[in-house]
Image (cartoon, rainbow, N blue to C red):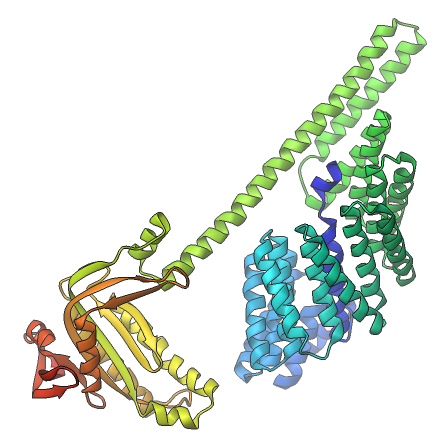
Length: 609
């Protein structure tokens, strides 16, 4: 049927419930008048930071006339919350930002905002916020057509919200998850989710939630061919929504009742419900519902052979569709309407003049042909737009996947993995390997919280990453407090040993500077560095969670150079010394006994010559 190709009304109802929940959960409904009154307080700029964060939160939520202004308030809230280390308001700022990006259609930015809101909620130990963020992420993936990710994040949201005390948040996530499973034809699973959501909504006396649970359950029954049950549940939903004055939901479910009778070829009942849906939508100014119901009526009249009525309602559908989507087809439709009226008048003149019957047949045939051609043109145009949008989404996902792969593997290795599905291990004859290690890390780990310890290590390793990238070296991995990198791969180079020592000196200087200044009041460590040069084998380990790694005696010796180094020193092997001795002033340490290696010559690097 035409209607099913044009509208995804399963998801709309769940999203509407979600929006209603957010409004209730925050304690107020969106109101532009509230935003207009709060702007006066905002312009005075007399509030302290805590008061200002709450003001910005309310401004961003209530500003509905100007989305860019609402985004501005959200960004200002995010910046202020960061400066105050207030993670609860940071969560709220990112959440508002994501909501506004949804309305602008920028789904990638919405996803980024919701992921950050989830991270902030975790730091704020705000479990309902974390769960709601994952629900929003799942909704975006569902809208983008990524069913796999949508189901993953709905499940994650539900697991988290089961630990929280806000039952309506849990029921909302269950309802939206049920919609997703219904859309993906996992109908029994959808019914289970709707049943649990409905039970919670009833216990909380949240009538709108109860109504949408009933209505969406009815939609599933309709998909299963259980029309009597479908009609029973949808009528129950309509009855509740009428009392709640939720006209969008009433109109939507009336439309779906018409669709059920359409499949039964009960044209009279189908027309009755479609007309009720259209009348209510017109009265309440629900343009999207008007166009849906108009298209249904056009299809119904076409089935009953009433072509003029079918064309009349199809024109109404086009007009409302264009008013929503802002397409440049209104003028064209006006011309078609004129042509139709002229043809109609001509037929009346022909009848009055008692012309031949064949002329009337030709006139009617022309009208039918015009309608069919128009349907074909609209269908082709809609298909073109769908393909274009789908290709855009696929390309965006491909770019994100490529970026993630390049963040894990070297570019050459990532390209090989994409082309062949595997990576062949390669031998490199000359590679310089560096290891670092923090002194006394075990003692610090026993006395610090895991969060504080990880935060401190991340502070160092993030800077190490930047230094390694500066000298075109390759980070291999981190093991606890140990950092490993290499030079001379995946593309062989001549000066990798010199670059590695320069990078090591810069790492050493950064660590010393951090110990002196301690700008962010992190836990501070002293560091040892060891370097060795020689042949290695490099490749990718495993078939899941790919990891680029290197193996060989060169790696083991580099690790021994680090363990036999001293605080604040760069200890290099004889192999590395023989390469860089003309570039750096090195201090010979003599032969040092190395575990499982015997005696080995070692050198401390001082300054560049």
